[in-house]
Image (tube, rainbow, N blue to C red; front, side, top):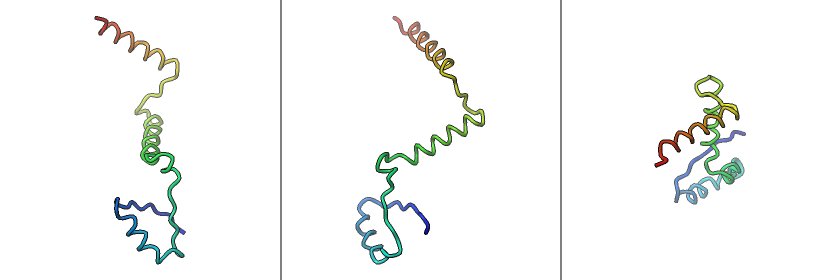
Length: 85
């Protein structure tokens, strides 16, 4: 058996289900559980993989917690001094 994802336009779902009703012995229609919990699951998964690839390739620097805290504190100090008045 092969698994495919099919995107169906709003308003066409009932027609689609009527068409495939004749083949119910040969196909299974299931809702993707990932999309029930998070409708943007696959977009987030793709972005996360891209982030990991960028970190692994050195394109993006991964900061340690200590480095991050130092950078963010410096940033807030700069903002305060710039917009204090």
